[in-house]
Image (cartoon, rainbow, N blue to C red):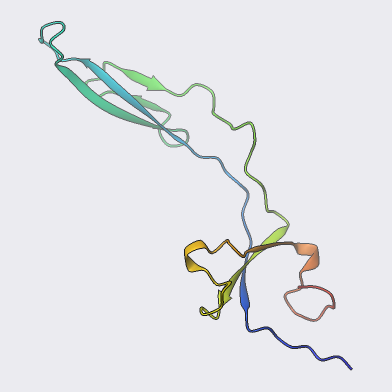
Length: 126
């Protein structure tokens, strides 16, 4: 006969979506104030924020400067993909040493879906 003892530590399971890369680019513009003496240091400053999805083109407040994204800034190394896997994070009891709300991924487990059965009816699976 076998006896299964349940551990006091319980995990929450998460399924991660596909990785995405998002970025914003800030453009800081300085130009001489209209009517100011050359070299006086009087400048108008403005910051434009370009978003690769929502706002790839921006204009300065007076329309004299136009900034646009050309191409993309796709990274040479993409973030890891966890498709086909689940992420298990220790959640309860909060008094357990592995439950770390300030760094909840510290004791996380990444497990392939082929090794998981959430019904609990198949042997040798999480």
